Image 1: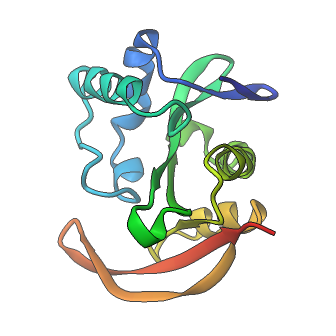
Image 2 (image 1 turned 45 degrees about the horizontal axis):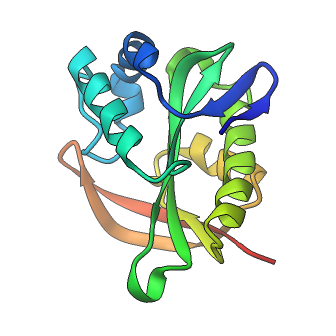
Length: 171
């Protein structure tokens, strides 16, 4: 499975991605905008472990964001359970040297359309930290709508943070 958008693509993580995954993920600025399950520092061992995890997951739930076939980021969803089985939470990141190029905006739009169809979802949501306006712009460009502020919703790096609720719903 491959979703192409020149000069980028979304594809499953592969063993060959270990060095580039570790290189681009090992950045404090990237880590500051993600959940604590994303390690920092990010080592070659972390990259290898992540790739093994993704290879055991349902195909399409976790994909590599590639620039000219080099892994420079990741995108994926966590499917909801029970009464939330028609929803999924979206997460994504991109290596800092690729920020500001519109790569993630395109990736989020294409990937969201794909997972909504593939997994028969009615809703995909994301919860960016309130201090991350770039992620808000990405979501809005991809057709997500602001639904509210989740006050004091997280503690990241010792700081209590508000998060924003953005969602895209099936038409």
